[in-house]
Each structure stands twice: as structure tokens, then as C-alpha cells.
Image (cartoon, rainbow, N blue to C red; front, side, top):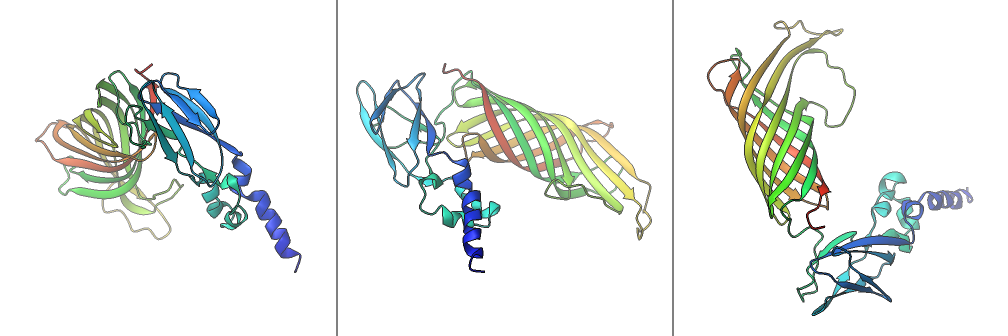
Length: 317
């Protein structure tokens, strides 16, 4: 029994996340507003296209970095913080690895991407792009994770409402002016009732809802926020399903699918939380029904959206 505790500690040391996955150094990327010289410890680096990569030794100590142009010089302080690998010990080994790595430099890291106004004498920096320029283009990938449907299927006497999960969107953002971009995307969303991907089987009678639509919108980028407005075209789908089971109640009617083709609007609001990651809300109301022919019917989709934006064209180079 006395030998069990040392054995467990050895296993924890061998499986500690920061020890396994972090090297003794980490790389950060600095973007400056002007050509600059970056001074850190005993090294100096010239920016190329206003960008410089710097390698720092992991430590619990903050790091001073000096930025110099032809006319100005300022020093910023990069804070040391716990790395993702260190926090991963909570999931990987129940937090035991955090105790093992308590005093190890490998547990620490620094902001990986920072933006600096070289002409501002204040010792500040930003982790987010302060501005975007005409001509830049981004691939927009997103997951409409939580979706609220409000549908009026053709020839149904009642409105159908549902809250569910999952969807997918693929689009392009193109900056047609500084800090203002056009967004075009193909989108789908469902009311899948399980919040995690899983193979499930439902018995009895149940409704399912989904949508497939295209969107074109104009968007304004304001620091970390972006807001947009535009038009959409697509289909809203309502299904009444039935799956027989051992104790299933007989269906109230035959299974049926109702599809409507609609024109509508779209309004979006996003908040940028990382270099590429955004969290947003999408409101897509539809008013004009193209198929089947008939009077216009109000329907909507409201989604909580997780989006990643990856640059494919940079006008600054």
C-alpha cells in the first residue's frame, strides 16, 4: 500500500498534459501598424509586412517587449498565463497533473497573437484586429448550434414551434470597404432534439423541422462586434414522422412532409472571442411564400451560432 502512492504520482507525471505537449518555448506573432523593430530580452527582430514572429521561453514571469519605429518607442508587458494543455489536466487525469506541474515553467504561455499601434505611445496592445481593409476575404464556417423554429406549414391549421440543435453554414466574407463586408452563404439548420452528436432512435409520432437557405447580407465590423442585414431565399420543412415500437401509440394521422419556398430577411450580430472564433445570433424572418402559391405567411428561424473565419485573401500584402 505504501508503494501505491509513489506509483500513482509517477503515472501522473508521465501523463501530465503540459509536460507532454508543451515545449520549453512558445511562439507569438506580432502585427504592427508601421514597420518596426521588436526588442525582447537580448534579441531584436525587424517586421516583415508589419509582422514579426518571436520565440519566448515559458515562464511564470511577464515579458517586456519594446516596439521601435523611426520616431517612436514604447514598451508593452505580455502577461504570463496558464496554457490550454495545463487546464486539460482537469479532463485528462482529474486534475492530478495540475499538482505535478504546479511549479513547472511548461504550464505557462503568452498571448499567441497581438496587434500593436506602433504610433501610439501608450503601452497597450490588442488581441484582436482593430480594423479591416477593402479587398480582404474570409471563409466563414459556422455551426448554428441551437435553433428555434416558428413555422406555418401549407394546409396545416396550427403553427408549429420547436427548439432544437445543429446545423451547418459555409460562406464567404468580402470587405468591399474598410470595416464593411458582404457575406454570402449556404445554410442549413435542424431541430434535432439531442444537443450532442449521437445516434438516436425515436418511437411513436413526432415532428421534425429543418431549413435550407441562401443568404446575402451587408455587415459592419466595429472592434469585436459585427452586425449585418440582408435577404434570404430557401425552403422551410416540417415533417410529421412515425416509428413503430413495442408500446407505441398508433399515429393520429399518416406521416407527411410539408415544404414551403420562401423569401425573407436576415439579421445577424456576432462577438469575436478569439483570433478566428465568433459567437452570434441569427434572426431570419420570412414573409413571402413562393411555393405553394398562396398568401404570405410569417415564419422565422432564430439561431445561436458558433462561427470560424479564416483569411484567404489579405489586401495588406
